[in-house]
Amino acid sequence: MKLLKKSTLAIATCMTLVLSAGSFAAQNVESDVEKQSYSMGASIGNYLSSQIYNQTELGAQINVQLVIDGVIDALKNEQKMSDEDVLTYLNDRSELLNLLSSQKMQQIALESKKASDAFLVENKAKDGVKVTGSGLQYEVIKMGEGKKPNPEDVVTVKYKGTLVDGTVFDETTDPVRFALLTAIAGWEEGLRLMPEGSTFRFAIPSELAYGKDGAGDIPGDTALIFEVELVKSEAPSENAKGMGLTGMGMNGMMGSH
Image 1: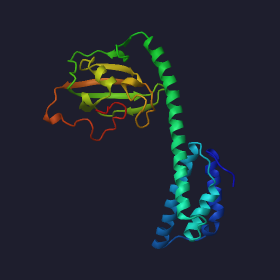
Image 2 (image 1 turned 45 degrees about the horizontal axis):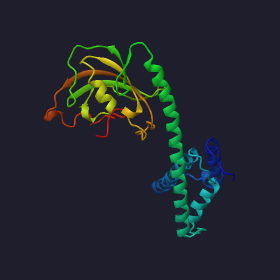
Image 3 (image 1 turned 180 degrees about the vertical axis):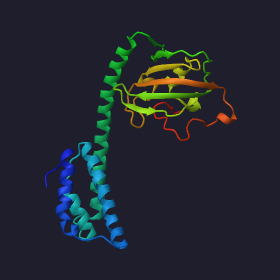
Image 4 (image 1 turned 90 degrees about the horizontal axis):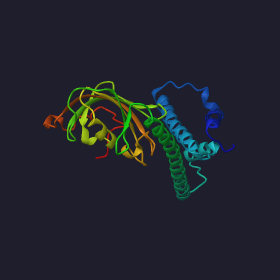
């Protein structure tokens, strides 16, 4: 079988498995033992399929037929390589995948930085957008009349977070409550500009968000856009400790304090 990549993989894998296991297709799986046995094989197959797909997405080549041959040979106790050799080649494979993953993440971060820089340049030129000394950009959508948060306060907010291409990566359905000191730098600075009852839109440079490392699905060197409503700000208390983390994603705003 040829070395396979990406979209070709799914079709080829399915065809290979159908041809290899065709003799089993006509068998009825009825008893609990048969169903349990089949489930074991299906679980292994699903795991291998996921591994193969993820590796080819990184640009790694793989011979699917030999993967299947290796599974069958191992089941028959007819392995053609020693356990030591298998471990050596798997370690080599792991090093390759780590390298490819690092290269891919660097490329994604490079593209994200380019898009983020272009967005920030364009955004700061818009009417109504103000820029602080740190580089935080903000726009007042609605100015409230309440008090502004102190650095140590606990705040209650609603928000929506997007990437510069408009992709939504985090959004509240109900107000969330958390200590302001636990948020990323852009949020700490931005929320302190907002009286209670306000809604602002922030464009946060990566330096005030997650920097070169990124976080989760957020690539490195990525600017983040938030529309935030400050519902309430209150002084910290015993009841406020730990608030804002339980049951919430908070993917784009929680810092690493």
